[in-house]
Length: 417
Figure 1 (cartoon, rainbow, N blue to C red):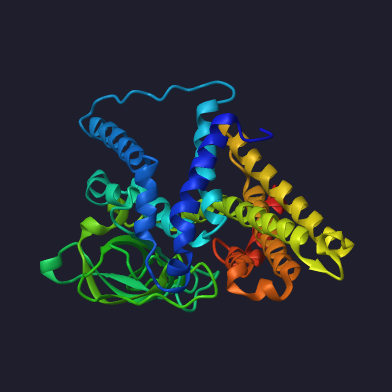
Figure 2: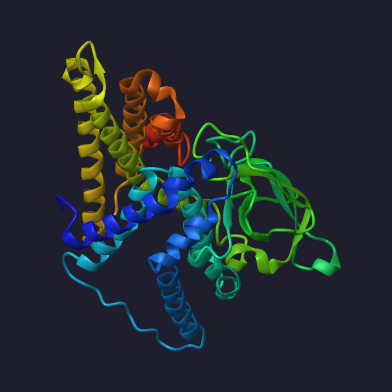
């Protein structure tokens, strides 16, 4: 794949038109005035029929699992030899909205992705049939807001090693087979407004050392006794993605809320696979912000006159623009390669995925920083929007695995072969 095809360009233009009409006029409200982003996101899903498509896919999967539960043989998926154009097209259609939204408000994609992709996706991939029917669909259509809670105040990159939130088997006969949870989670996307929360914690068992404790996950609901959701944090960037803390004090949950129905269904492996999902979208986010920064800088370089000539005539400005275009081209090629891999039914290695995330985050930070420099004093002003792009870019080097952790992942994968 070397470029978007005609249909993809048509969808891209439709999404871009929606963003410019519905998102851009409300940027200040969702970025700086604390207005939650969910109404805009729901309108987008409805406008493009994404909620209806999510429901259709949900119904198909539930019907298949119900048939299996009845002992019926479910129809096997047709295996296609060679390149699967339909799969590649689906991958492209997932990327295009991410790119178009992130040109203006990366936080919207973060809020949507965590609710639909991480919370809803965790239930659909690891939940029991009953859990899927009870909780998943409203998350997949954004009727309800979801959060995925693993980070803790002292954990950082060592999410499992420093995890202090504990679930203990409940001795209360009124909650037989259930658990009592205590602890705190922080930096939780959608945390302040989440209706349903996938909570990852450790199992507190007598005689088991903290490092050896099982990782277990629960589905929590807003308003449960002992569960407190903080107000949104005031952040450096992506303020259109509300982030907060969760506090758990003797939160009693039944066994029906144990994700997957067992203490081993969604442990370390399940959580780590979710990390990989997060990383896959970072290159698309970075491409959007690099693309938008370059557009703004090219226009400014043509119209901003200093010492009797446009600043674009200066070689130092030209060098900045040239490096931005190199980054844009590299990121776009990474996205196109990812789509091609999906079409061929292949997966990136851990080293490849981590390298893509590492390069994307660093390139985006460099380009957006230089964009502010091209604009000079105007670039420091909110009206120019490049300052927002720069602030939003920084989180790409932190969430879904810091730059430093990507380096470790790449090296370990290479050295293990």
